Image 1 (cartoon, rainbow, N blue to C red):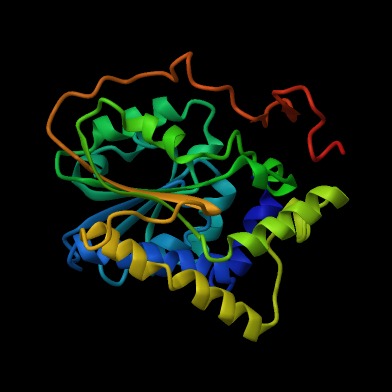
Image 2: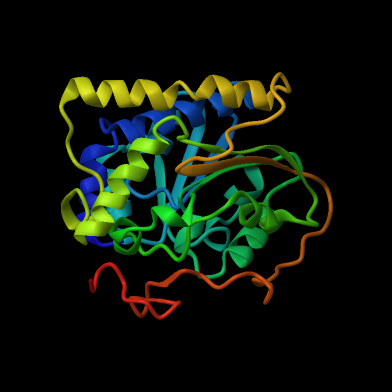
Length: 289
């Protein structure tokens, strides 16, 4: 991501419906598995401009890590009560990795060329009993300039996401699509943006300021999915959403050795290569269109 996009995120993540509703959902899930305590450490991997870690900092000891110095500078300026580190997880976390009760990865894995490598290294560094809570963008038909501007390699389906921990010592507590109720509207908006060849907001993003009443309604609709996810986590519901703009997964690391691994050759190729700005199927990128 570029500095301008980080600045947009910093300006909008405390008010924009997508950020605030997602944060409410994830914070509710965390509270159901980890009672609030300053002795409990949560690590926000790929923390960006810091809003998620800051929202948890009143109840937990939070550490944010991100490879972008621009993002970390913004996060430190905005949330001095949280410890932010510029670096790569898990190597640059040091002893913090072994203390963490939960690793949070919100829309991180799609930015990584080898998500299997990052996931296995992070899981290997986690102590048995630690949780991993992650979200990723879903449904390749929603691909747009927003994805390319944010340097996404892929959008996931549920099976592709689950392949990351296949055969590893983890317990899958929850995996489902979410942001499902607004899917038809977002699908329509993305289709329109694909047709006109431009994003809805600034700097190639789909983040823009909405009228406050509409913003509140969208937050209410999205955040309302928290009840479904809680029932799924607690076993009071057998299945989650069958389609959505994103996927969420909650895993618990179990005892056992975890070898670092690379992306298997049988995994489908990524949709886009941010390094070259080209789509791997040979078709023109949205940026070039």
